[in-house]
Image (cartoon, rainbow over all chains, first blue to last red; front, side, top):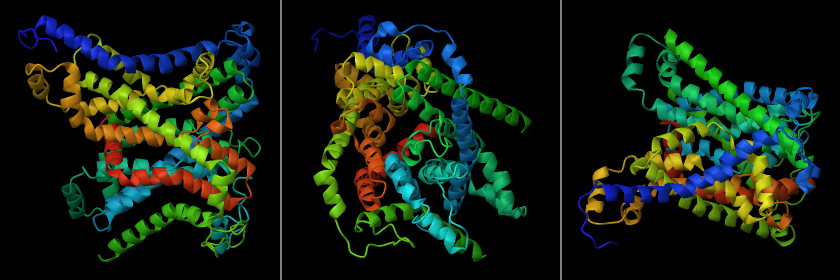
Length: 308
Length: 271
């Protein structure tokens, strides 16, 4: 410590010293973010304009700039479009399904007459913190055609067993069952937190006006959670666009490529075939899709908000 | 009037069954003898309880090694993430420096960029540094957590300036203020962030799959994915390895769930 008399806090030398200390606090984090996040992201853009492949991995001299060729080739590749279609399906089905489940569970848990609410809250959330790969392996067995518990339940009500992960028409719904089971607790907690801020008087007033449960939900609950609904759906879309471990563990992209997602396609292109240039182009297309969907949702929300 | 409470409680019980059944089944099957679970109708409890699969996993499948890798990486990742993000989050909330608002805006914008985009160049970068297939390579992404920085900043905003000023007038240096005044007040959010990083690292799959190429360095999820391709038929063995993988994080979460849920809501509802 300096023994000099300090003039008073806020003096010029003091401010400079404090500024230096502040930089000491933020510099390590900013450098790490710069080196391990920002540079790789920009480098990915450059890499996507090269033909970086396994030969370039051995000797960087084999790499050439090829302009937009990777993108052109991607857009004429049926496998890539298949991955885009599958990812789109996952998102289009999965986002409403998972949000509806979360919201349904939240509305039920928000009712005062339900017993042991804090306990259920934690329990319903628990699958979210479990290890994705482990629970994906677990669901593989639950979905087993012959010995799976799910087909057992189905057959006990007299229906035919389903070849969940072996049939291209049921593989996406099967994976979605697992994903919804695993993640619905997350958005449920967010909805619950918001529902708890809705004053009871509002429901009371609606009831006095003769509104049933559905009308109460439509005119009291829904307006209260609308902004949260938007936020949650944006985050969910981004999440469903980044499915990877689920198809990797449960189906390896099959059957008949029906569960190859964009990120799975990128992984195979990059780390199985070592076409890192082309894989970077995939990464960028994925990013632009997420960005586009986010912007559209924000625009729609603004439009809807203007009407109300 | 009496019907509604009954219906709601039944609905909650039904959801609880759907949520918990898979985990209970996993635990139960892990104690069954080899081949027992492959039957119709699927048995729910073992005829004879056995620990043979757990023994097999540790004795001949190298599970101890994977468990250690996961534990070491999650612990180191947590320590590093805290060292990098807690001081920075505090500084962004409470210390004035040139360009603070500007840099913060850029970081907010960067939040929409998924980290996966930089995966390929990051791999090449670490390869040129000789860090592929090392702990260091696996730890790198946890240093650059913008989310963690935000979480700490949000919380640190509530520290009263008067408290910091009082310490400054007493002649404390900024480093001393951070250690003696700021850190104790930040304790809850530090626990939350530590929990997030530990669970995040433990459960992470894509990055360790890419960067840890040698089997002896595999973390549990990577080992599990490889094991499940080799042992598809061994339901009981696979369920035992899933239990070993899931149990530590589930227990940790249940023990510290208050911190987890509070932090999660602070990070998403407010902003």
